[in-house]
Length: 367
Image 1: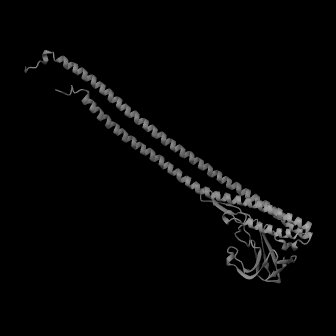
Image 2 (image 1 turned 180 degrees about the vertical axis):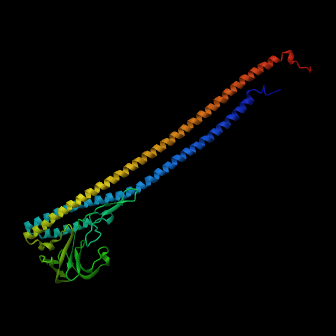
Image 3 (image 1 turned 45 degrees about the horizontal axis):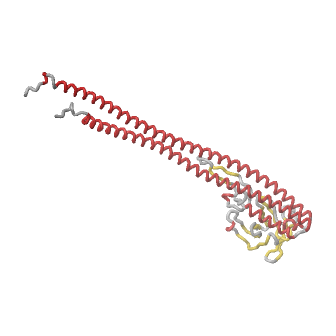
């Protein structure tokens, strides 16, 4: 007959395993909650870092656009400097050999100069694309550099060579710098040229202006032009913008040394203006470079924060796993010790019961 005392390790072992399973289950549940909380903390911080990183990406895009604009400006100034050198060389050839080809080249280099100045759109062009052709106000580049919402403005400069003739009759003659034509307007919309009012009269800036008089006391000059096949005289003021250069028409077609020297003086003045424009672009470059470095530092800091957060999360999860394993191991060792102790007790009781079988005090009275 089996009793509680002689049931032995089987009954106790089964109870021990059930107890161990229960404790392990509770420990695993507690571990999972801690892991979830730790992971949620990490995810919250990671999401915040990613949001800041996304903002920096947008700022980087703005600053990069400004950087490209400045690079375009410096590149354009280099090209224009080369074109001015070619214009000087053309004047030298004219003086030496009275070359008509060099006269044509002078005007072509001037056309190319204006093409370079206006090559890029206003968003990427700090040396052309003036905002107001009546004043030749330069095209500034504005961008957002940080999270404060404050904008940075890079000062533009106009290095094209534009002009107009303000006729005493109230009309204005304005050139198309690309096609090298000069057209008369009763009104000119400097911001939306298509909305301007033309008279229909026009001429070529290469071949259409045949003579220009010296300025009178009021600054007015007489311009002899070929318009619709007829020679006409236009009296008005010549107003120049940008580098202040004009075509051979304004230098008597380089007929004399004095005409050539006058053009050279204007080229020298243009070079001085170009040097100032380059200085402005270099200053702009430094500003953009500083903002770029600031953003890079913040991005590097965010990367370090993200790495640190990930490391701490992994470190925390590893520590929880270790604590769990240690806890389970301790439970198992404790129950094993209890089991061994119980087995020792059972052995003692079993030995005692065996001895009691030969004791007269334990004789079965029913025999």
